[in-house]
Length: 196
Ligand code: SAH
Image 1: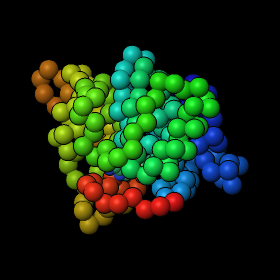
Image 2: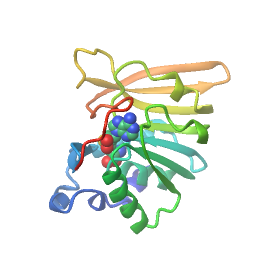
Image 3: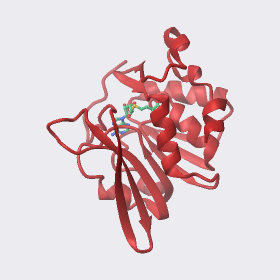
């Protein structure tokens, strides 16, 4: 996992004017009011997904495409979905330039997953879920599958979230609440995406 983090150039996923800050351990603006996540949090989420190389992964909230690039390095196939077309376009270009051909990009609302392409061995949610993880997403996990998402526990404090891991096994679904984190919200439903 650390090898993937060292081989994927984060500066390729930050806007040109912020490239010299690409290796700071901070989230950075990428346009459309969104951010590329903090590297240490991305690494932690990758660790929690326990990828071995054979997985089909769903990545919700493509943003810059950096997280998707790391997932593509660690798994067999990645489907990534983003509601801002301008971000998808830039992410697609960066992924293509890095030769990561095992990523499919989708534009749209990923809050309900991509049921027509389920099941997934791993689901990575890169935006904060404002309540319980939707069953529609859990239903798209293959047996043995893992989902990692920042989940807000208190609607009064939307900026405070905990990384949550959901596992689906033969015996049912288990959930663990872990590290405190801070992500932009997962926008649910038909709200129009703002322009860059
Ligand atoms: N993974 C990204 C960081 C994502 S920030 C990276 O590596 O750069 C979260 C992203 O989720 C934002 O780009 C935001 O537009 C997107 N997002 C929010 N709600 C969404 C939804 N319902 N469907 C798809 N994308 C969504």
